[in-house]
View 1: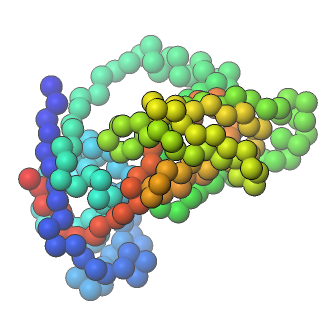
View 2: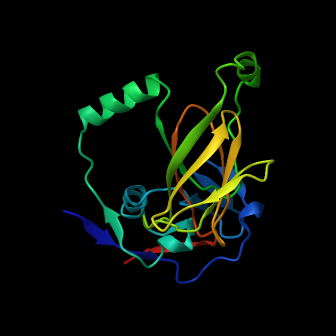
Amino acid sequence: MKHKIQISIPEPCHEGWQNMTPVEKGRFCASCQKKVLDFTYLSDNEIIKVVTKNDNLCARIDVSNLNRNLIKTKTKSNYFGYFATTVLAFFGLGIENVVAQEKPVVEQTDFKYLNKATDSVKKIIVSGLVKNVYGQPLPGAIIKIKGTKNSTNTDQNGKYTIEVNQGEILIFSFLAKIDKEVLVRNSKIINVILHSGELLIGQVILK
């Protein structure tokens, strides 16, 4: 059974995030002398866990997570899924899920190895699903290979397929959503969640 709650920020803080001091799991606001937690990339379960255990809490959060039902779900053990994921990862066919970040972060790779194995580094077909924080597919999202003119769009179900070289970078974007850059390694399935890009800071009120 799913339990739903909502959170809001009635009075947003106008202090700049970049002006705050970085601390664990967030930043410290010198203006109000409080720690501001970063909820930007947290799941519904993680947000609920924090807000239900803390009063007078300040946070930075994507506006798409405000004034909507946050769904707390019980996780079930899935030994078969774990086994299958392990096997797929071993054979280089793992599934990669990516959440958009405020500033695109690209993981580094060993290009010496890629250049050495020129025979094995060839074009691969990458496919996946692009959706928003509500889990809804984003039709018409753009997937572009960085540094090239090659690109594709998601279909009406938010699905895409693109041919790319290992070691190249895919850029995901949709309207005002934050762009996300993903380095293509061994995964042939890359799923992406794009946030709205609008963030608020302030005291979180649990409804």
